[in-house]
Length: 416
Ligand code: HEM
Picture 1 (cartoon, protein in one colour):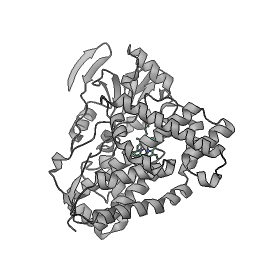
Picture 2 (cartoon, rainbow, N blue to C red):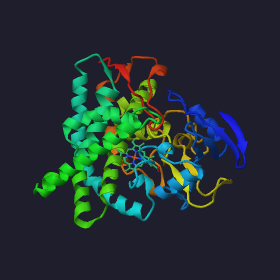
Picture 3 (cartoon, protein in one colour):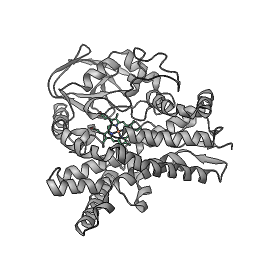
Picture 4 (cartoon, rainbow, N blue to C red):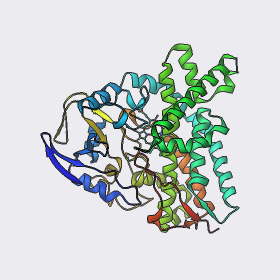
């Protein structure tokens, strides 16, 4: 970390935090510097990072720490910059979705999408997820080794969100490469992949709309995209751009995150065989095991960008109007003021709340779905292969970039 000072005080030049098994000492260092630290990221964007639990709760509920596209654009201009360089593709460059709107627009959009996440809808998906998990486990039984990401976590994450949205089966596996480059800042194909995904979604919406117009029975069109199209066309409840942007957000936010979580849970259970044995002996611990994974090594390292819409003071630090703010979720989830012995992975830990899904009005809409997928996948895999072990050194596990925290592959010997 290179530290310099300017008229606003200290600023740290922060390289991308390491994508390794244990980046947490770096988060500890950031937290140790204070509740709010001003950094400059590798593309030159200045950001106020919030690293402690108490200040994060304050910031995530603050009326002047906003997410609206206009505030993000203002903050970009305040830094004398324009263009998408400062944004993450899920939050920054695509206008009109939940992640870059504030109330009342955010409230309107969220109330439409939340309809898709009712307990009844989730229960309908549960049987399909269980079936999918079992079929992937059966397929793995035919060999002695497997990659728990490519052969297990990834197909579960992508298939589930595609079932929910109504993306045809033959299109699903193409997403991996595109999604990965979209989620990797600085990836040479980032812009191209973003454009490809957006074009794909626009075409899919047109095809579904045509099906609706041609009188496909509404019962046949119960997927989320069709429901949103109906909301758009019947009552002008959202604009066409918003519809596209929301669909894109759900597709991207709804799979890489869950794949990361499933992989992280399986990895930490393999690396902590005593904890895995507890789970094998008492399968009802699975809910706790997933909550502990979310706390200990959740798959989203930062909240998406926010920007101050007035001068704000958090944790004694003045954050001027037009500044970017991000909350460092892993730093909060290992804040020793909040959690005893925070660096211990303990699936019996009683967690009242963690921050892996964020907090406040933007709290993750997919948290129940993610839990359903992860509990089903991890619970069943651990029972099927209770002695599986990593087929490489833990430090050789390849990690994704910095937007999603998750293994790119997890080679294992199944040891049936
Ligand atoms: C928002 C994490 C899975 C859809 C968020 C936020 C976090 C998060 C931290 C808040 C972002 C912010 O405040 O800037 C996660 C994690 C997941 C997961 C760790 C899995 C382990 C999902 C799934 C879906 C989803 C499966 C969809 C099916 C969304 C949406 C938002 C969101 C739509 C925006 C909500 C809003 O702004 O009102 N997620 N997510 N997420 N997530 Fe998730």
